[in-house]
Amino acid sequence: MQNIFLAGSSRGVGREIAKLLLENEPPSVNLKVLLRNPTYAVELEALGAKVMFGDALNSAELEASLQGNEIDVVITTMGGLPSDRGERADCEGNKNLIDAAVKAGVKKFILVSSIGSGNSVVAISPQVLQTLGPILKEKEKAEQHLAASGLTYTIIRPGGLKSEAATGNAVLTEDPTVAGIIHRADVAKLVFDCLNSENANNKVFSAIDLNMLFKPVEFETFDL
Image (cartoon, rainbow, N blue to C red; front, side):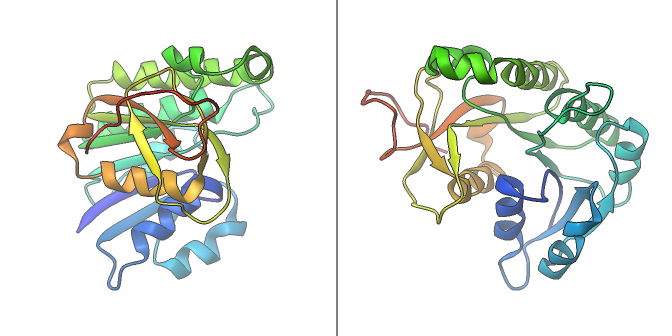
């Protein structure tokens, strides 16, 4: 049984990851989830997750949440609106979680970021960059912090997200020039596949659906 800590599980990709991790009977993992809003606790507890309440912008609360059973893998999909002080979970929250994971001796850290961050900025249009540029810069800072942390890591940058059923056509690539659409459930499956893949260690991937590319291009997919 792996001990997994998931931040960002209240909705979106994080919720899909939680469901996927706990769908087996009996579950193959012990899952702790970090929540700031208790509204989502009942559903996650019903799935079988242990809910920890805390704010990712509070480093002490994060460190306390990671205590207890030794955590094998931390997964984060955190993002969202800035705090009253202008801090963003995309950057400060994820950086706090990375630092807490280092202190807790976590074995692997998976960060779900976004196409357009880092060297994949070349994959998005100027119009998108004008709108999302500041957020992507924050995500890039978190990516850089993780890469420099000493943790074994995997960074997954999905393309444009849709909340529809998984297609099964999603792939990972190390090519930063590729962009497209991907369903959140498919991103969750790619994260799940990276959990125990040594090939994914210390890699940065773009995640897209082969049938929903923004433009037809040739690229190499990555075999986990």
